[in-house]
Each structure stands twice: as C-alpha cells, then as structure tokens.
Amino acid sequence: MSGALLTDVSPPAAEQPTEAEWAAAVSAITRLPADGRVLLICHVNPDGDALGSMLGFGLGLRQLGVRHLQATFPGRPEVPEPLQAMPGLDLLVPATAADPDPDLVICFDVAGVSRLGDLADRLDRAGAALVLDHHASNTRFGGIHLVDPDAAATSVVVEKLLVRLGVPLDAEIAECLYIALATDTGSFRFDMTTPAVHEMAARLLATGISPGEISRRIFDTRPFGAVRLYGDVLGRTQLEPSAAGGVGLVWTYATLADLARHGQRPYTLEPLIDSVRCTAEADVSCVLKQVTEAEWAVSMRSKGATDVSAVAVALGGGGHRLAAGFTGRGSAPEIVDAIRAELARAGRPGAAGAGMPSADLQDRE
Ligand code: AMP
Ligand code: MN
Ligand code: MN
Image (cartoon, rainbow, N blue to C red; front, side, top):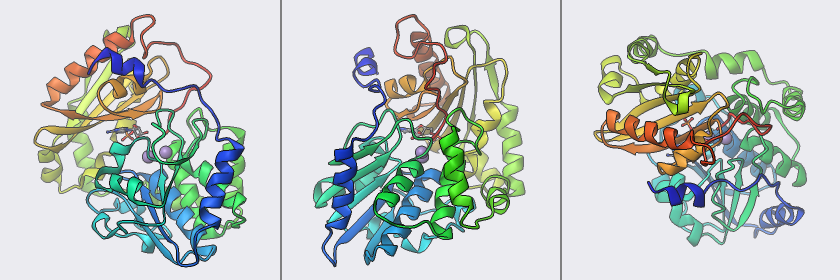
C-alpha cells in the first residue's frame, strides 16, 4: 500500500459530535413515520461493543414504539457463543433478510464502509443513514455522524443518544451497554477508563444487572478445545525485539486447520491477542487469523509507542492508535513481512505511525 494513502487517511484531530449533529440524530428518529422501518447494522464479526451498542439501542427504539425494527451484521449470521445470552437478540435477522430500503439505517461501531460488507448498499437505499461510532479512523460515511473518538466504546455514544431521546435505562438495555463498555475497556483496564466511564458503569449497574455473572459469561468461559487451541497457537509465537524501529514485535498465527483440529469456531480466537500482547519485550503484538486459504484477519495492538492504526490503515484496515486490524492477503510470512515493513516506516521520525505515548492513548474496539 502506498505511502500517500498512509498520510491521506491518517485520522483527523479528535472532535466531539456537534449540537447540530445530536439534533439531526434525534430528529431522524423522532420524525420517523408511525410505520417507519429502521435497520440497525453493526460491523462484520461483531464484538461486544458492536452487538451491545446495536441491541441496546434497538431495545431503546422499541421502548419508543418503533415497530418495524431489524438488527443485523454482514456475513455469516453467527453470534459468538459468549454473546448468545445478550438481551435483544430477538431483533437480529441474517443480512440476507435485512430490509433492502429502510426509512432509517443506523450503523454501530463501524469505522468504514468496508466493515459493512454486502450491507453497504443500504447507505444509499435508506431514507437516512446515521452513524454512531468512536473510531478515530471513521471515514465519515453516511449522512448523520455521531462519532466521538474520545468515547471508550460506541455504547457511550448510544447512552447519550438514548438520554436525548428520553429513553430510561432498563436492565436489558443496561446489560447490552455494560457488555459493550466492558469489552472495549478491557474490563475497565485500558487508558480510556476515565471517571466518566466508571460513572456510566455505575448508572448501568444501578439497574440491577450482575457484573460478576456477565463477566464470567462474556470473558471467562471457553470450551476446553479453545484452551488446547490457545496452547498450540501461543506455542508458535515469535518475538522480534529489534522490529518496529527497536520497540519490538511479537506475533503468531492461527490457521483454519488449527480451528478444525480443536473443533473451534473462528470467534474463539478473538481474545488470543490479549495473551500475546502481554509480552514485555515487545511494544507491538499481532495475531493473524486465517479466514480463507489466502485471507487473514489481522489484529494489532501497541502498548503506546506505536500507532498501529496508521500501520493497519496503510495495509487497508483501520482502528485505534493502540488497537487496529486489517485483512491480509497471501501467506502468513508474506503478511508479517508487510507488517514489519510498515512498522519500520512508522518507526522513522516524522512518519505517521511514529511517536511516543500521548494523552489520547486508546485501546478499544
Ligand atoms: P480486532 O483486532 O479485530 O479486535 O480489531 C481492533 C480494531 O481494529 C477495531 O477497532 C476494529 O474496528 C479495527 N479493525 C480490525 N480489523 C479491521 C479491518 N479489516 N478493517 C478496518 N478496521 C479493522
Ligand atoms: Mn468499539
Ligand atoms: Mn468493535
């Protein structure tokens, strides 16, 4: 990918949604006709923030009396097992059954059109398109933007919009938003865990939801096959202390054969990056997850010295400064070569990915 792209699409300075944007979002919803059709979409391979934000907002719209309401995401209609008890799942339809021309489409946790897959056409076909997101790399697709790069999760934006719509938090909405917030803050460990985040968590917990039970279900339960799979994949992890301009790279990969051998679904691999990024000797961590013969979902993390979002954008993806990803094509060694090359570029003074830890440190999805 060219250097021009790296600089062309580097994220703009963080800007909050304006009052005009909030007003436009509220009126897009309150001015829906009585039989208005609303389609909610979150990103492909949804995580806790994508699903939780979408379903929590969907439950809020239901409270407002929106009757023709669907929630969906592109690709295979498979909800990761840990998220299968989330409230509001009855709103979900497969992408193939999604309303082709809704009055309003609302996107959640989607940084760019490519994350909408085959559902991207709804942006043109819908009467209006509202985008709720917190990615600094958000490309400002769609018509109405509520994009807050300072928000720890998209669910922070969702809660604010629900307040403006006069929807009170009930336990079901709260559980969705809590799962979203806990997912993207790494269970309230990452730098974006501000006082405001804890205040939001307090409002959610005040509805009576059970944080211990939710955390066990979402983060601390996996099949034995997954534990064995992790053993195999972590066992082949490579450390390159001099890579990434000297701050170090640690990486591993998981193949479709690994998944098949242990009888596991691809989403089982999502938490794996958290084990790899523990490595003290490397700032940058990567996990390559094979999706098809020559296609890999790549997760990248930094501890603070590297803007992995710039690297991911240069390789066709996106994300946040400290948590980013892209779709890699070719063999695993070829993709790691490309990452090494971009990291070396990013490590040079003045390059887009260079830099010391800054005040806007983020580690969220
Ligand atoms: P993940 O490593 O999948 O947890 O993703 C980390 C961050 O990178 C999230 O903010 C994602 O939105 C973003 N990301 C991951 N994969 C892609 C991709 N293929 N294109 C754009 N952004 C991505
Ligand atoms: Mn998110
Ligand atoms: Mn996400």
